[in-house]
Amino acid sequence: MKILIRTDGSEKLGNGHIFRMKALSDQFQKFNLDHSFAIREDDYWILNLKNEGKEVHNLCKTPENKVNELAGLISNQKVSHLVYDTRKDLTMQELKAIKQHTGVRVIVNDSPEDTRLVADVNLYPPVPQIKEWDWSGFEGSEILSGWEYVLLRKEFLAQNHHKVTNKMPKSVLLAFGSTDPFGLTEKVLSILAENSQMLAGMKFYIVAGPQFSRVAPLQKLISKLNLAAEIIFAPPDIADLYRKMDMAIIAFGVTAYELVVCEVPFLSVSISVDHECSASIFELSGLSVSLGLIENFEKDFYSKLSEFINLYSSKVVQLRQFNTHFQISNYNKVIHAITNISYRKNPRSFR
Image (tube, rainbow, N blue to C red; front, side):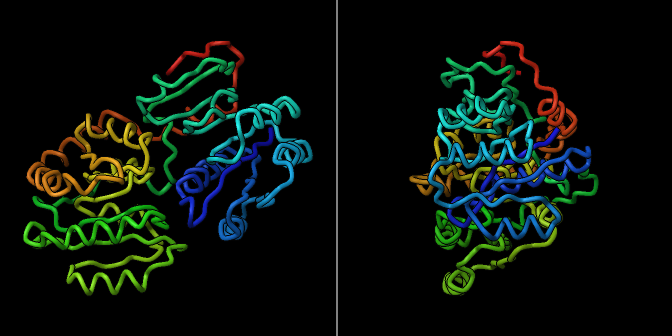
């Protein structure tokens, strides 16, 4: 068995797909599964993964034919399983052609795109919208959805036995993606500065990934706004940092799941309708508050933040109860789903 992970990350795209595929790669290594990466977007990640000892294939940034390119790689490397986790690269027809040409088994991870219809297996977090999508034409075997299919990095898998939380939040994480392509950091800081009285005694910790390019102007903005804020650039132990936080304001994505296992209540901004639907599960479970879509999240920001702070202690309790009853990220199930694909025609089975 040889597995190829097709993913991308960049300053423009963000790095959520890369982070969860790196997490999956670590588990493949743990299970002694032969695998490699195929990356198109960013030389940074190609070098980063190679430095970690990963096998990486550099796809052409502007290929003449994406189907021939990936199909050729799959055939030459004798790949049996393709894990596809990227956006706006292949069309459904292109991925289907690759599958037909090579016989590769396809696993699509957490995608709303039509490429999911070509997959033998689809893996999703517990998102409600998958039951509303059109699945006609899907001929795979399984559509798996649940907390256990969230792909967390290994540093987040340890139990959070020693979490100490203040009665009221004092340390506040601001995390809008490692590159924050939508400039949410600056927007949220400016909004927070308008009501400093509500935030008395709080300090803000801004996470900036290694490709974040606005550190200097962000420092100037913090000084101008006179906020108690600190930029933490490329923290070496992100899980440890999260566990030290009392609360967070984030862009919805993989960070949301990471904060749940770290028992950090949060408010989230969604960059798409799909993300907003996914965020609703956290809100319904009492784990977070959704600030809505990026286009108008400022509208109810203060009222939601005020209510969140008033209910802070109860949200911490709900997080601890949640982690007692649910396991986020069960790699035994994930690996089994990927490596033991059946061909039962059960296209509308959501498990």
